[in-house]
Image (tube, rainbow, N blue to C red; front, top):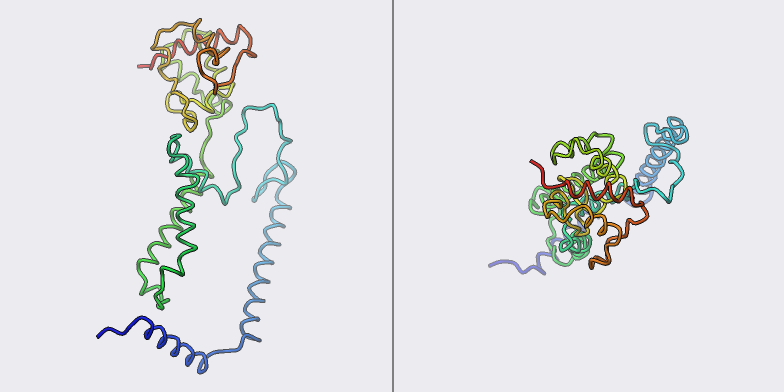
Length: 273
């Protein structure tokens, strides 16, 4: 006949009390000595890392652990993408996985909340007295998978590249666009492609696989296949609201010449080869 859970818990508690009386050590000086030693070790490591950071860096020039400070913020730039602190990189990259507008809530609130609730409720649904890892394979495997997942997501978030105009231009991507889309000899379209990268359009749109689709804006790789013409794209970019788009900002500030270049680029984007 199986022993009831309450009786097993009582027997386990009694055995624990007997072990403490037989082999236990008082908190002072044993435990407090261990705590003091570990605390001093942690403080020494922090001081050591601070010294390495301070003496290997010089102003904005990064050392082993980064620079003292970064360049002064420019509120007028469109080339800066805000990034979280390193301990939130796993959540930062999780948003890249759940990048569709319908699933953003799942990545930002759903999964983190479920995991947090499971962690808080752990003492209530895990009532087993056994604490040895070898006898708790499910808990051990779950903990290892969580640590590995967060580690991989943190690393991917730290090394993720953003679709910045400066990076795209420096990498020669504009030339690749021109070759793929077939407007290599069209200087106006090439200049429009450069303007497209510099103006922050890829913060919302995807073009030939690069950019950001998190906000639900349409992909523009083959937008020119609609054959609406340069005048239409020029008018749309200058005033999206008149076409029912109240989300996209107006780019009328670019001026007539730049709007023509941008519209020529969009009209030449017919999906490529």
